[in-house]
Length: 325
Ligand SMILES: Nc1ncnc2c1ncn2[C@@H]1O[C@H](COP(=O)(O)OP(=O)(O)O)[C@@H](O)[C@H]1O
Ligand SMILES: [Mg+2]
Image (tube, rainbow, N blue to C red; front, side, top):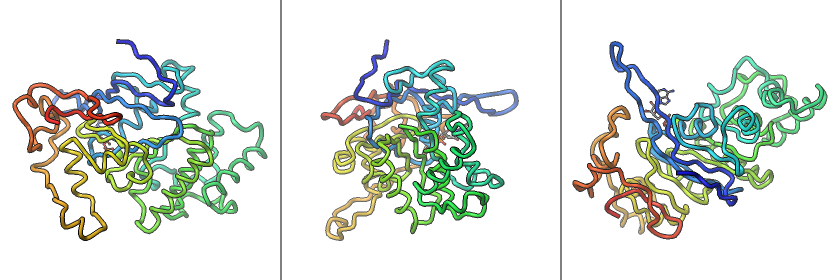
């Protein structure tokens, strides 16, 4: 099967797989299928939300699509080019960046803000001299609302929210077009989460950025995403425009995720039925046969154990992988 790029999309991911060999006993390794045959596209300037419980493979999707991990299988296309080989990879690494989940572990505490932010500038040789580099660091710091006089301070001197701003400034340093935001606010105080999200939205408008925005909580991405993709145990379950997905979820897993989101209107809230999933998420080393969700699904039938449902378009732009929808 050959893949044909669609110029409407900036990023296209086709049948992406990431299997990790893990030790499961004396001289025994098992493949942990962290991401198993995941496909999606992101339009230029769009935010695609990616949600699912912790451990379902969201970070691995983000890291693999940026080639921080070499993919086990599948293809990544960026701006009409397939990412493979040193040449395309080098260019892609400049144009696609990541903001990491934990601003404490992702920044070296013994480096100054200036050196952290300038890292991509140095790697890609983007400034001709020291003066230009300094000016650019200052420009990036003010872009993310940091005091430029703090450029020579060390990362450990900053609060979580400020550290995440440093991480965002670093991601912006190579003038990327695409950024994977991996739960960029989940390690921050609730009081500053909105500030950072608003800033990311402002930067998106200002710099015409395209985002993959990862969150474990659907309510975080609901307002900022044009479309939302839902993952479970390394598989994509549903993908639809954000409004459509939150109002008319089709996959039983998405339905249960949505039932856990609080509704502000008390009258509507009373009507809401909270669906508590039965059992725990199975181990990613022992993914159930057929549909990975079937062991927790109240609609599961014999067919669900036999084959893994493929994504199909149930309504225009609304894709779902379920035998019983
Ligand atoms: N480098 C790795 N080696 C082995 N297993 C990994 C590695 N990274 C992630 N995993 C496993 O892959 C699965 C998905 O992890 P991750 O992508 O971090 O999920 P999420 O971001 O949705 O919480 C988990 O079971 C995790 O333990
Ligand atoms: Mg993660």
